[in-house]
Length: 475
Ligand code: GLN
Image (cartoon, rainbow, N blue to C red):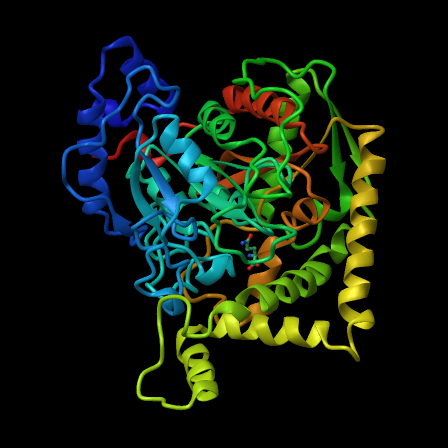
């Protein structure tokens, strides 16, 4: 069985469809591993009943799926890593999850995350931190750290997460797997517990680029339940390109210099050399407003969060403070006890940024910066097909290293926030190791360029030949 568990999801699905692999066996193998997980990647694992009935012909071939906790899943705990949602079992399922289970990927479990997806290390979960399978004294990144760790460790064949400022790409980078943040609107947000609605986007965390394409194709598309979702201009195609001839890659000076660890830069530059060998034209470029991405993001995202999180009042969902008989005090006590420190910090920041006296100075100004960042990318697309940067400025850091310094934590997002601010897609693939830990290489493209991005990432993936990931040898 462990042979089947070291296949990529697409390989496993192909074997199931060919009749060479029993999906029930696959299910039990992964369920056992998920139930025995000691990295705290899961917050809930499917019961050990019979495997869900699988149509062998289904596109996803019965390959089980791990789902970030914040996706509402009918009858299954969906707590977004927060105590305030403790015990919440939604009466409905998020569209993305429903599409994937409908396409033949049964729900294996829910994965740990930073509370309401606020964080870069999964240390902000009310259910304890997730450990990095490469080194258990280190973080897996965040906020989709549970999904990334489970996939990297071979305890899930594939997973989905959400990315608001980097939460798919950064944990994928820190765990040595592939993470794709789609174009804003490509995947329905219906049933995703909201953090910052103008930025949140669901996407795959997978062992390789092909798996990312397969999962993305099955979850994307217009949904009447989310008015910001749009149909893709062309069907998702599985990547097949083996060269990069004629592909123009822009390397923004602003995101590839100061603040990036030397080992990460070295791996990044090696990957650019590979791109050149594969035929790409690699040139330096400018994204002059990208360095202001963090400042704009940490006003816009908290502003939207402060509004989205107003609904947690102890009446409608999950947790309620006990022993309080006054209604207003019940609200405040519930929020005081139910939210963690980072969430409270963001609610305060966001409420302040939106207050009438400061709205123009903070929220309004941040929105203008957002427009300028978007224009920088538009200008870049006149010369380049894709932009290349390191995904994260550093490799996985020690647990606790940044918890006391929110600004140091926020800087993890330096290379990943400009893309969601502009609504454009980006993918992270493992490019090698630094200090024995995985490094991520990021490619970003114009809106709806996912097919091209997947193709370019696939060509690079084949050339890099990253073979070290723990899932290959997991028992
Ligand atoms: N690390 C960023 C934050 O804390 C991004 C999180 C995300 O993408 N959900 O907001």
